[in-house]
Image (cartoon, rainbow, N blue to C red; front, side):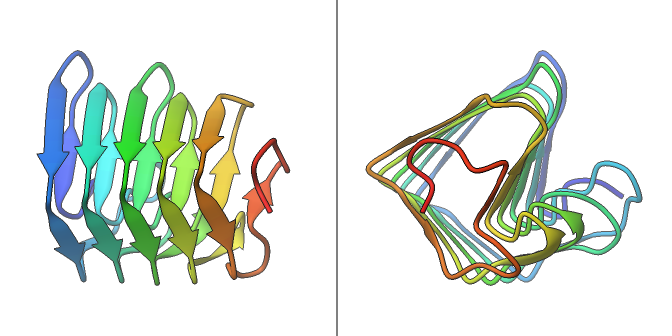
Length: 143
């Protein structure tokens, strides 16, 4: 299973505003996305992604796949877990965070954010207190 709460397919556009995604689980081995698996265009604002799990895969909170785009503003990712990479967020495409927080998430690697490329942009966002680390690789704006 992929996308515990939302699976946005390739070429689709999803808009999420003022939403709480809490306690969702993705059991897929490859893709995951405990709360959200995004393979298209995702625009998220003023939401909370909390306590979601990608059991064996990537992106406890959000998984942005290859060629996908996730634009996230004023959103909090907390207490999410991935069995593999990116406890809060896994980025395989392009992810932009503005005024958001990624805190207290955990994974095998990239507790806060794991990016398979350098296509993550942080603007006035906080990434800290994640286990075992905050960002892999370490990129601009990641503490």
